Length: 144
Ligand SMILES: [Zn+2]
Image (cartoon, rainbow, N blue to C red; front, side):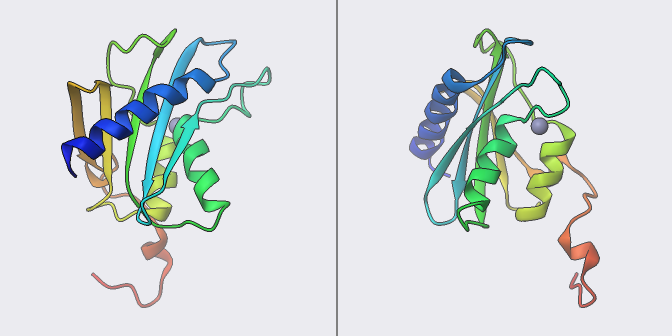
């Protein structure tokens, strides 16, 4: 990915933290999901008084895209911190990694973790979810 595009995704993810609904944890998370068609879908975390129904920023972004018929993705940027202070990387939780596994090639899909435009690292999904179980595991004509 080009540095300019990475910086735009970091900006978008940071801006998405403004929409986080986090009255309980005050831990804001923003995500920017780049689809192969070039569209960037934003996502924020959304908490709930019942706790269990809470949703992560990454899944918010994925489900927005999938609900509009978009199923192919190149990368996601995730940022997060208590009261929007970006001190360390906010890596995707296990559930979100599994959702990524459903729609993304683990060897190709890139996960950008950032605390700002000058500080970020890029991982593949395979690096963050080794030996992930995905759609290919359920296909009879699975190719290796
Ligand atoms: Zn998550």
